[in-house]
Amino acid sequence: MFLFRYCSERNLAVNPQGGNTGLVGGSVPVFDEIILSMALMNQIISFNSVSGILICQAGCILENLSQYLESMDFTMPLDLGAKGSCHIGGNVATNAGGLRVLRYGSLRGTVLGLEVVLADGSILNCLASLQKDNTGYDLKQLFIGSEGTLGVITTVSILCPQKPKAVNLAFLGCPGFSQVLETFTTCRGMLGEILSAYEFMDDKSMKLVESHLKLSNPVTGSPFYVLIETSGSNSAHDEEKLNHFLEQAMTSGLVMDGTVVTEDKRIKALWALRERITEALTHDGYVYKYDISLPVKRLYDLVTDTRERLGRSAKNVVGYGHLGDGNLHLNITAESYSHSLLEAIEPFVYEWTAQYQVSISAEHGLGFKKKHYIHYSKPREAVHLMQKFKAMLDPKGILNPYKTLPASSL
Ligand SMILES: O=C(O)CC[C@@H](O)C(=O)O
Ligand SMILES: [Zn+2]
Image (cartoon, rainbow, N blue to C red; front, side):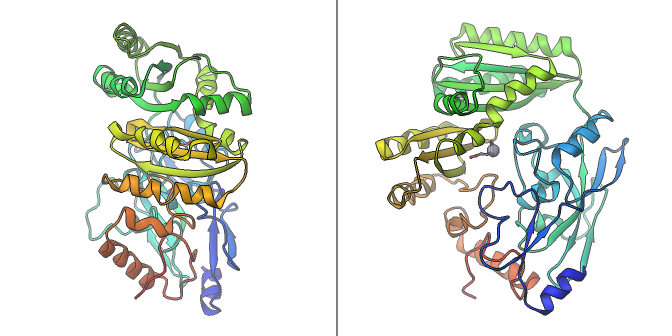
């Protein structure tokens, strides 16, 4: 690509930018980087309705891709709150997780191929449309989740599932976190192959959505809420299974109250209660954000311990997330940024998590904000090898500098 040859020759740094919806500062320049907007690379190149393989440019907006596929009875294997503005290229560059990982797995499995522009301007064509390919190293994996630090993704080939014919969404209130966990094991057992999402929210996060966004919670009065989605091919069969599960969950006291919806419009409205928590938080003040992978049994302990530690110095300490994937979103709000509050939170949160073998960035990446904490999740040798890859692929350090990795001591 001409631009990269030009920048490489002149030592100009480049900050690739998709929808700019990231939460760790990976898509924003730090000093004097040139912003490379991918927005005009927004063409769908092909879709094969037999294989379900979509090939498109990096700047396609996720929601546009979903709508395009839905008109052909297919769907994207990923969905997230920022779908209206995030780009597929950014999703792949950050290995974005979202709401469908439980059903379709991560992008590391569904992305079949990539075209990438390297720092010297050469084009690496790994744009396979094959589900099986064991010829040599799987180079595309290096770029998935590398946050634009090793190359710029320009085209994506992705395996898309058929659109489920029957979707149900249950919004339930649980009396405690242990019931949230037991409800999860029960529904995994009873719903089996039709379970497609299991999300949890605490009461405080729901209160923020109600007060700041004026959305109404149909099931008030519980300390925890769960969203359970089923996606299958036979509505009568799926409803029967869901009803059996709900009966069991209610009679055994796992669930206090709940509602089930099947119409598209009502499903979207219920999902909004979960998807728009991030937006509600931004209306609550300055937000300290943490995105942790933890053993599910300990998931909420981090929220309780942080709340107790911070006491009245924080405005709200809330926990919610992709429980089905063991992923907690811990968010702390304050009226405004306070350095002493930050010092009370960090490294406490990272040290707390280091007791378990966890990830300090489950799905948001490290970007600019979290790069110095990589050592809490990766051994020194691994970080060192990452720095070597970076030096090899981007010897001048012009690709999204100051992101993802701490400066190399090589
Ligand atoms: O704002 C957050 O902490 C989480 C954002 C996103 O990953 C979500 O699951 O809603
Ligand atoms: Zn998330």
